[in-house]
Image 1 (tube, rainbow, N blue to C red):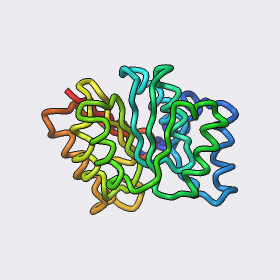
Image 2 (image 1 turned 90 degrees about the vertical axis):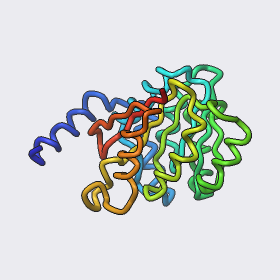
Image 3 (image 1 turned 45 degrees about the horizontal axis):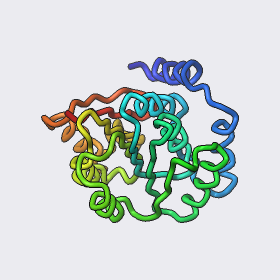
Image 4 (image 1 turned 180 degrees about the vertical axis):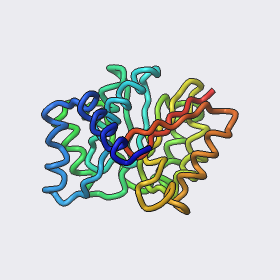
Length: 212
């Protein structure tokens, strides 16, 4: 695709589908002022997450990579009223900031921020929750660990549950960020008979997969 056309498509998607409330619109400015990196999904991807969560039973969601809490707010808004999101964040300062933002957004009652490395936290959650216990997963953490996350997450996914991942077309460092794991992750899910999967070219690529 012509780069100018691609830029137009992205800007059009943001304009039409990226409408956000005042709290979300100011969140990343507050995050950068607090010293957090200026990284988050775009608003159109956030809306996609909310819609996808609402298309599941919406009772238990899991996110790898909280950062400032932007995507967690979108996910939480897609849950059932008594649904719960567990979001895992490695950096304590990021987790603290996200908790405050979740509270201000009015969704803190349905979100738990767990501090730690995702690969360290996931086995404990699996032991607590059991197999086939999660409706929705969003992965937006260490790209080189995506394949390892998949190994941990697959048993947790309920039939009909959705596993979604960000940056699957790379983060700009190279073609699918060679050596960073996203290409292998994409191919693993695309070839797994237990999943139906496709990636959509929103932002840096969003993979959507459904557990059969």
